[in-house]
Length: 103
Image (cartoon, rainbow, N blue to C red; front, side, top):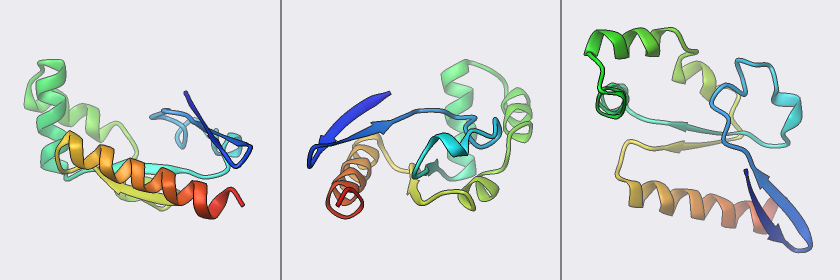
């Protein structure tokens, strides 16, 4: 969890992959859903966990679909690009939240 101070208000950022599935949405004020292209998701899981395509697909299919998660999100960030793009998009969103939501 990261805390960001804004206009004398704290913003807590919680990285919780199963927040929706665990029925913990009442613990947050806003939800950011990070998505990516399904082929990229598959490739990243295979590379990260050193598993087969079949095993990776099994993991993906055991989770709530990205399209379903998006329905719960107040903000959506597409992480189909590189790390720098994700950092840029996340920073832009944090700035937006500081300026608009924490008034």
